Length: 168
Image (cartoon, rainbow, N blue to C red):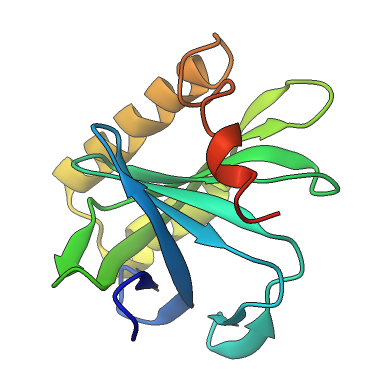
């Protein structure tokens, strides 16, 4: 892969494929690594080939239990955060994450912030045997994101827009 391309690999906790796609490295700052995914990007979603129809920017924080997608219209979710294990980097060009089911989403237009997929989290907690410390970290990250997505905190308010402008 070219040096400005990062392969993003999400798996479920049991190791099964979840998402896999190339992204363009936009920058690295104190928040984490900002990656751009233009429309037309070939990807894999739940083990099946797919093509991204709407561009987005992904923030992979340095040491946090979440990642965050920032989306342009017409996507109804302006900000979509996946609760995930902290990123594990393989060199500079591949990042591995385990998706932990929970999502925190801010809706475009209304600003409504919601926690999603609690049922899937509970089911997988049993099925995959999530350790108690993983559950505690995932729940803490969810609570934190529920607050910051609604209170005007950056980078969730407007700071992401300069990066999103590079991929739309």
